[in-house]
Image (cartoon, rainbow, N blue to C red; front, side):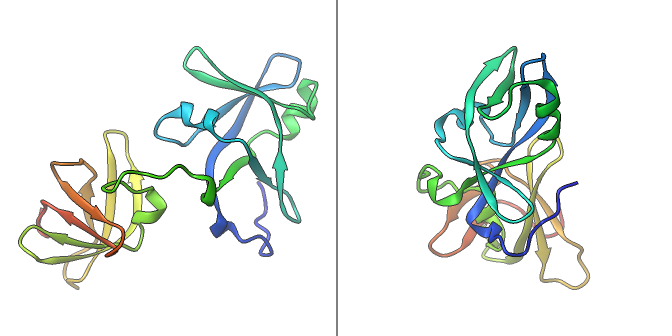
Length: 179
């Protein structure tokens, strides 16, 4: 398990992938993408991994799709034993290098902390986190009502999620507190 160093400002980085099992004998490994579209990884130029003292840039020799998986190799790794040492390391990108999104879109990390209001103007609460339990992404909203536990709202655009306004830090939903 990797220790988190308090001297690294992780708020500048976004976890985008994780190094998985080795593949073959020449230092290749599977790369598990956390992006909605795994091919998004191919668009980034710089990647980082957390070491014991700092965030260090890692250089990929290649990254390619193979049978619906992503196979990659770091330039500094040439055999299976070296690749195993990198196993399960998290791969980050700088948030500042993320592509711009359309007006009504946001990254998960941008949704956290946003205020949620329904079509009737009722303030439902604040987004605590975004999860994916298989079927779709789900907003976990901390309810303002003390009697109600957190509200789970499916992230279905144009049906449940009506709009996202980053400038107002708000999300408009077609949802009721007691659903």
